[in-house]
Amino acid sequence: MPELPEVETIKRGLITHLQNSIVQGVIVRHSHLRWPIPPNLNDRLSFKIIHQVSRRGKYLLLHFSSGTLIIHLGMSGSLRILEQNTPPLRHDHVDIILPQDKCLRYNDPRRFGAILWTEADPQVHPLIQSIGLEPLDSQFTGEYLHRVAINRRLPIKTFLMNSRIIAGIGNIYANEALFLSKIHPTTLAKQLSQAQCETLVQSIKEVLNNAILSGGTTLKDFVNSEGKPGYFSQQLYVYGRANQPCKICSSLLQLIQLGQRSTVFCMSCQAC
Ligand SMILES: [Zn+2]
Image (cartoon, protein in one colour):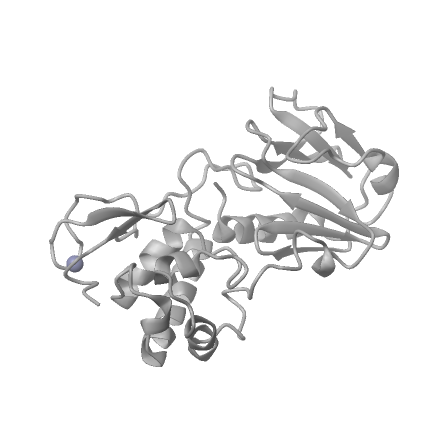
């Protein structure tokens, strides 16, 4: 599943190809994604300028003067920039045709993704307005985390993954950030000191920024906007390493389920 760093990487890639481009047309081969793709997308977007490409949580936003196209990659979606005459594959559901015979092609085998259109401010769209603070935003600080965690009686790992509190940290990065912060994933959110919250926020920013710098870390077959295979980071300390030795202390890493998500940690390094 593409996580925030992958979506940020895709956004940065798309800016190069899309910003200030005039859409030449839209081809919808399969309109039933998680929600139906709005009808008449070809009429809405043809010969309109993409003024800006941005991201909110894991949603990509293509801003036009008449509205905003909202794209979510769901579980298995990907976007590629291709020559328009490239024969479509089975799950290539949508092409946004660009100048110079290029296209932005959306592929999604499981069809849990979404392509939606809004003419209102996208920040108040029902899918977007409840998303919490962006973890890379300067407003996301230890003081903020401490303030929102202080009354919450749930494991810090589960708390971090609530996208109404913090926009899409994702399971990989929650595991890694807790390891770097030496915080046990089942520690109740309310038990964290302000100093621990400061450390945790720095770790979250560090793991996300490292992932963005390395082009996003994914489980399999991630294709970024340049059409190149994704980079699988070798820097993971705990995620996907259950029962392997800790890279710091050599203890065997433990696997537990928290909020139905795999959680891997080191009992020695993350003692409290
Ligand atoms: Zn360890």
